[in-house]
View 1 (tube, rainbow, N blue to C red):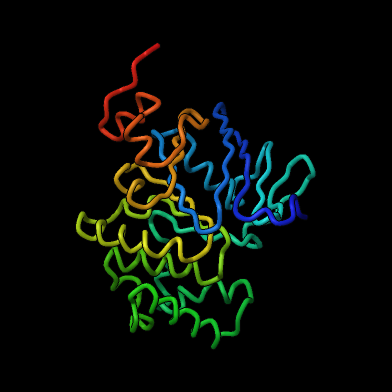
View 2: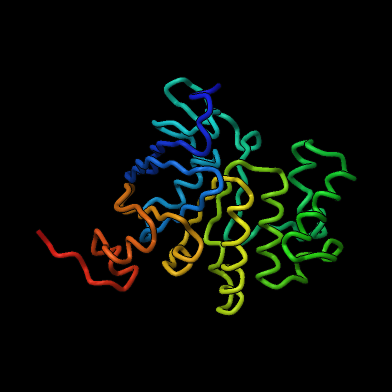
Length: 252
């Protein structure tokens, strides 16, 4: 099911409900663009990622990727998560402890029957090389540092060629030095994938260092959006001012 020919990237209006909470967010992300999503606890960040991944069906709205409709409740159309060209990197990585690093990266290709075992292993090794993890294929996840595990999780998500990549707090569990290094690595790597990328984070430094554009959620709605430098220089709300340590906007 297509919504618009030639509509590249993510085009979405996400309306979902959890109990008394309602999330209603419109969002566009171009191929190769990295958008950071920030907001206080309970703002709807996790619900947004879950809806885009297909883990939380829409109550209303539309999710389309490169013109292909993934979720449209009005048309009774829903693409199951396993059939979506979407990669997800969870905060705790969720690597399979009983599999080697190579088999972890190859898992999506094998599970979706996108490649033979030999081809999936070769693709996994190629992605490990790109993640500066050449030679790590035979190792087990328990032997990896936090930064290495994060890169393996990213390689696994990218190995299937997703058109949308969702990162949930990708740097939260890392020490300060590893965090700085991996932030720079992701900033150089993510746009080159050609995927539309959404990064959820609580940290404005991570958001500003990773994202081309920021979307600030509050109480289930978009409170502000724009380039990091613009939001830091002219914060539209008190919360955005607090994020960037800037002077709060004057009340009118």
